[in-house]
Image (cartoon, rainbow, N blue to C red; front, side):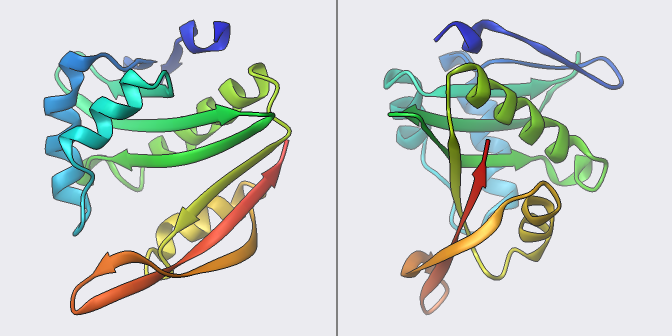
Length: 158
């Protein structure tokens, strides 16, 4: 994917760049602090090994966030998007989402999909504000305390 080689400059000397295996330890550290049921090291390793469009958002000091996009057959699937807790609510998730949408466009994607927990209202509001629409529901999709949680399926026509 030629589009995967692009970098994107963010405010305050932050940069989105292709994720490498050496980033996984820092990515996991962020993932484990922001999600009750985080991805495992294997999830991130498999994503990189499979050639998914994996991105790290970092400053000179540390990794701030990351995004994982799977592209196939003209569709993009946003698998994971995370911003470190102390960097949230500053527009960085939105900027990283824009970057991933641009990558998808560059790869010829017509439609982008994602799943989000109904309890993650901040993420839902972000996706709605960027033009994603609710298109379905996956029952009992996510692990949750004491059971399972549904997933809202959202789509964006690109």
